[in-house]
Length: 112
Image 1: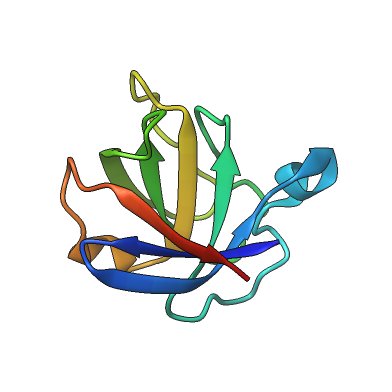
Image 2: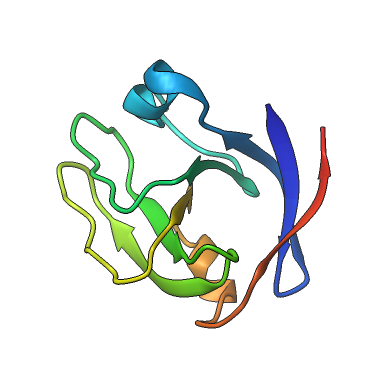
């Protein structure tokens, strides 16, 4: 399932939602690249890693209301930080976090 979201009035129109054990386990591991506005939303997730990944990604840590608590870029073979209050994580193409601010909210536009 893909969704459209807005962060700080920027539209991300190809966000996959990881559902089930396999999609959460694999995540973005098999990707050689991500397009602009493409990513993966991990609901009920507090931390991530980039083991076996081929590309660096931006990680956005979200609270239960989808407010941005923290963000960082992770290169392959790294472990993300533990951020208190994280309930969901959004993984995006490297460079996408440049348009975000702490305290911004993800707004769900619609489901595709």
